[in-house]
Amino acid sequence: MPDEAPSYSTTLATLSELTAAREHRRIAAALQGGDELYRVLLRTVPDMVVALFDRDLRCQVVDGGLDTIEQWRTILEGNTVRDAISDDGDGNRLDAFLRPALGGEATEFQWVGRVSGTRLNVQAVPVRDDRAGVIGVMAVCRDLTQRDAAGAAIRSARPLPTGSPVPRR
Image 1 (cartoon, rainbow, N blue to C red):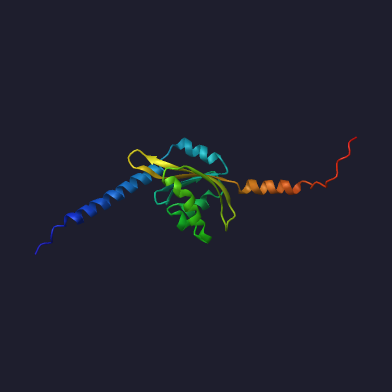
Image 2: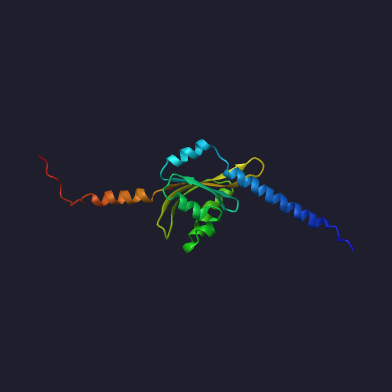
């Protein structure tokens, strides 16, 4: 007996799966595509990182001028923020901060990693596609960790006021 022809629902499910996979590849390519001038400018800012996430908050691209950029790439690219940063719930917290951008809302927040102590100022904005609407999130991160350490060092080097006035001559 010859194999039965696939049913309508099986054919539809297969076509939907293939279309979804093709659309996912198109969106990933759109997220990864960019202007080279943008990349050159980004690399010249020493304390900035830009990460592009798809609708699943899976990181597609990490770029920037921060010294630890290769470490960021290793941790983030190809992973969701929850999977990449799983220590002490930091991934869940970051996911919650980025998620409003998937709804079309730009957000800005301060991020302090509980384990690493890294302090970031993050602006998360939706990435839109003409056909698919919001296809992901772009997070522009400025590293404030070194700036905070330098400020603390300057503050600790200043003499503390004694409360007595300085005599005038």
